[in-house]
Image (cartoon, rainbow, N blue to C red; front, side):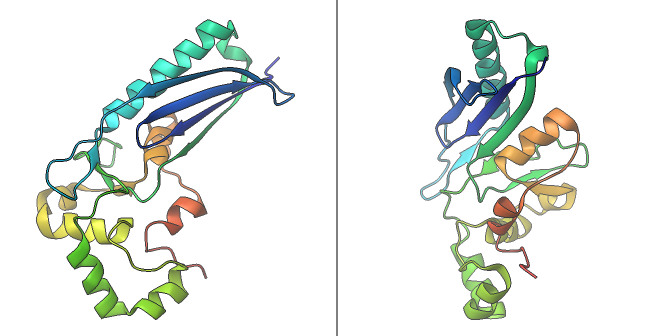
Length: 187
């Protein structure tokens, strides 16, 4: 009988995985860290392969330590850092490292967005202020600075959405992460 919940939280420094029973009791937890790359000042990137390895490692550790059979897992859930910019091709393969939330390279793009759309108007549309940390300005940066990557991009994903695609083959997100793009129309 499927009675366990496996939850993954893909944070900035690593993945924390937890296993709960159907009564909400914590059975086991595990953590696997990964690196943030800083190729230039104000830039911050992560390798999506590191996220996947952390998911696999923590899941195996939880199942081994708890002795819960994989078939008894009823639900697998993901949460994670937002405002990333991971361009992927139509098969979901990453085209570059993910530009994560802490990256500030898109300052000029955010300023141009504010000038063209207007800060108040964008706030009314998206519910968020314009910021270089949001995905929209980062996508603009990729378009302007890595046109070959932009041309191959089928989607731009957040961390948990990449993992969900890798597990299911479906491109999905939720409204919370979509809102962190500076592109989501609340209406």
